[in-house]
Length: 348
Image (tube, rainbow, N blue to C red; front, side, top):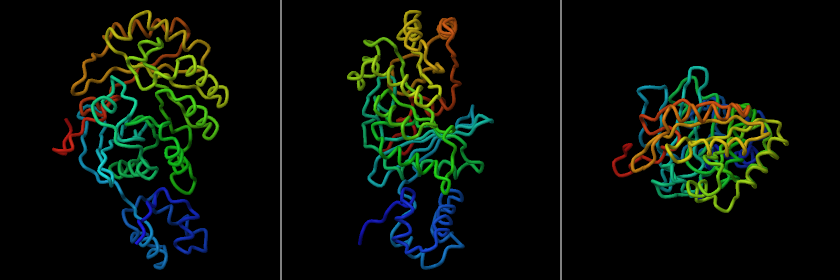
């Protein structure tokens, strides 16, 4: 018997062919049940004819991820959840509620092959594989089942480098944007990259209204190579050209993410280098507090160092914001995903 197809990433014509659907509105009904009402079984689709339901059961499956454990922050309205894929890989996703915005932070890979030294996903856990589009979609569905209001925003800032899994991430983006499915506005989606120029260009060409964030963390080449060894082959000059081209093609501001590491990348010289990198760029610099995780050796920059760093940039007429810590008490903040213990089914 053929293996069942994950329904969340099935194309509409695939549904229509395998389920012998003749009326197009039936496909929209099915999509409504799956993506808006988020049913857990085909049998819940009460207005879909029995013959179509039978075909759905025969050819498709709804869930392939198994929820393992979750953790809720005691300080902020944030929770994270670990999942196991059908082939045993571990992934994590995070839901954040600021009051004004509800955001789902999704993973594009199990672990990360870039091995950035300050990130648990790349330095503490083994790389598993890239995720299929339906596994990305399922994270969003399963997070939203816990929160009646659901997420308004999506950020690809979980495990993995999205542009090293570009085909499946872009397939997931099309599903999120589809009017018959989630119908999420592109301005509410952000893809964060460590700096893959081709992916940056392709995002602008295919999804020009989806937001881009670039994880920079140092504007000095030797230090960036040390912090982010998986990107040594991509010089900062090439990355900078790609960002400027993206801005020119989309007319959107880009977020430049900069993790503040004590006595590593927070000196006045580092601030000047960042200012030079961002000169003339339509961007917002996001200064991120370093979040410790088991086994890491870095420390977060002091408040005075962060304040001086920000003032240096602002004197250069650059827009700077500081990211508020969310979920760091449950290892759900930036750089902390990857602390799930498969043997105990608990978070470290």
